[in-house]
Image (cartoon, rainbow, N blue to C red; front, top):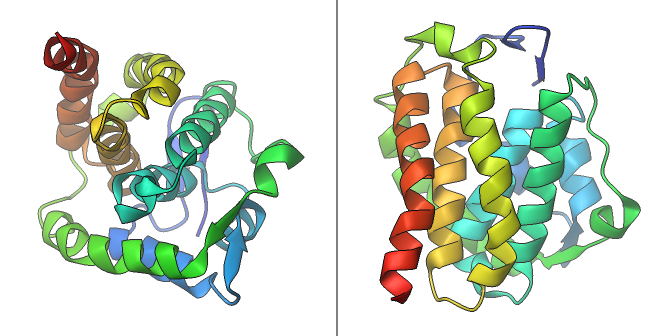
Length: 204
């Protein structure tokens, strides 16, 4: 399971992915009481940028996000992934400080089980369409917004549910990359534009 950001577009071996398959891969990575970020990266593949973005953002959306520091860790991981995708890197590089981070396997599996039903429901409606949106420069617009959003996500840990909302929107964009659904990409772009405004209004 691989996909890379080439010179102009996302290219994947099979064209699209069932999102539930990504959860299957993540769950199969759990073999001990704890799982490290490095194990997750190796399991999904070091060229699977969109898959990794989806998995990490979903972790921050699931009940696992209640663990202190998860939202911040996910924000840093997603920022690094998007920066490397925009730079055309073909293999994921992550600092060792992040790859050694551990998550409770029990909490992670509980989050995966919680995510399965909504993921299976959503993926039934996804299909390749408006694929021109996955070409530059259009692809860089939502990516730039995601990078900006991740800079604020560490502070969102102070505001209940705000980090999960931001992560859910990032997960939508990652899902659009994997399924090549341009309509979903457009929806995620609109939501990415609205998230900072919504959080500001909620706080005030």
